Amino acid sequence: MIKDQRCSAKVATNAQNAGLSKLGLLLAGSVLAFGAATLVRAESHEEITVSHGYTNFGELKYGPDMVHLDYVNPDAPKGGEISVWSRGTFDTFNAYTRAGSVAAGTTLLHESILAATADDPYGSYCYLCTTMEYPESLDWVIFNLRDDVEFTDGTLLTAEDLEFTYHLILEQGLPEYVTVVEDYLDGVEVLGPHRIKFYFTEDAPRRDVIGFAGITRAFSKAWFEETGARLDESTDVPFMGTAAYVVGSYDTNRQVIYERVPDWWGEDLPLNVGQNNFDTIRYEYFTDSAAAFEGFKAGEYTFRQENSSLQWATGYDFSAIDNGWVNVEELPDGSIGTAQAYVFDLREERFQDPKVREAIGLMYNFEWSNETLFYGLYARVESFWQNTDLQARGVPSDAEREILQPFVDSGLLDVSILTDEAVVPPVSNPSRPTDRANLRRASALLDEAGWVAGDDGMRRKDGELLSLEFLTYSPSSDRIVNPYVESLRRLGVDASMNRVDFAQYVERLDAPADFDIITHSMTQGFEPGIFLRQWFGSETAEDSSRNVMGLQNEAIDGLITVVVNSESLEDLTAAANALDRVLRAEQFWVPQFYNDKHFVAYYDMYEHPETLPPFALGNLSFWWYNAERAEELKAAGAF
Image 1: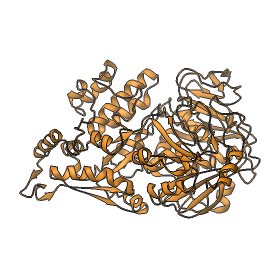
Image 2 (image 1 turned 90 degrees about the vertical axis):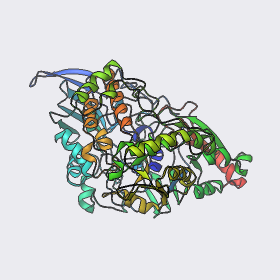
Image 3 (image 1 turned 60 degrees about the horizontal axis):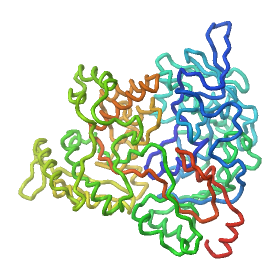
Image 4 (image 1 turned 135 degrees about the vertical axis):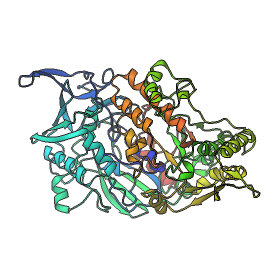
């Protein structure tokens, strides 16, 4: 199962739960894992690999005798509370349906067969299993499950629970995900109380299959049958899981508190050593970031990851910092730069013309915004795989051209894609909000598209006014969006901003979509595969929590297939470069900005490893609580 990150505000929060909650979604392949044993089954005469983990490329970072992850403190004390904030509202604990607004932190409740680490981008490790077995053909995989995994009611996990989960997904899962399951899995078979076999379809890309089976979450068959709970319905009763935390208490739309399970089954598992250190994890809800910031200053919660450059540059000078109660740090972030952007609803006829989209994109002045609004803290997003080898750069390589040529020959792509440099956002004059040169270029594009300015300066085509509404739910967006709106109005576009409450925002994104342009974060992984179809595939265009722009493009569909079928890292890189190049050429987005650091502030009772892993902040997992310092802060009146 896959947790949908339906709004960009949730993505960073969920990514913090590194290590075991950071699942390697696409981690299967033909390279044998380090430490694997092989044997031959007489009935098939096919070599079978038995291993503690799997990787497509090279060797697994951690061997079967690993004692703990390199980046944790194995002696980190257990105890205390960490509290963070979340924006908006919530009315459900079911993260597997689009009905309702899901509570923050639900990823803390459930675990999967395999787990990833925050320092091995391609590795996938047995977690609910001890070993896995698979043939050279990768037609199936067997997971030998641990016999000591307990649900939070004390009952033991069995293979029947995972079989039940598979059928539950097919019956009640999100349609966009059910389609993927049906494309990949040809069924499951219980071979014993703790032994389960996943069969893969003939057409399932072999690089993806083991990782896909491994993301299966552990749901209790008995619990679902007893309660009558459904995946496709909103619920205020969390689904029972096997993870280190349960919901301790909640106040709808105000607060959720997760409590660590006493005598948790996985406490001493090597992958867990030095993790899950807090007794409680508390989420406090606020209507917007400004209110949340005031709450942090008042000690209503104790850890804040700052996403406002204005606040970071100007707000962190309050008394709790002066008193030494609050630490302020910039910590490195080695993950892929998030592809945050404005995206159009391509189902709207006026946005189907690429000239219109390009013209609107030309009017966003990042350079002025960064200098004037963001205090020079951000960099411009250029790619869906920002700052990685998967990012398309310059003109296509020979390998890229070989991939792109058939799409040119068939007429799906213009021949210029073979020779042009990868599309990058326009550079603007930072001295004023509206760049005059880009204004002239945008005006010419709209003239060519038939949107002609009238006596009132506004552009019309066949009597229709060219309008554009920015839909947002965050007051902090006002200072960012309004200058863009004014620049567009100078172009003759009837632009406006409509800020609604969070519940309305979510409702307007659900099918049928009702928006012109929104901010969307299209988070990608180091090993892209089948889930690209949820982000960019034509089959998800009408109803998807990821392809919210309604993108339908036959060439992109074909390139996704090339990426999915890539077997070597070299082939995968070339295919991702080609896909990135074509996605950017479509200009269905107006790239915004990203940050390669974590801006964090926290009350000085938390500690973290000196060297953090590249792919996670891990504040909810492998940071820990200093009880003595916490008592000092309380005595001083810090909170």
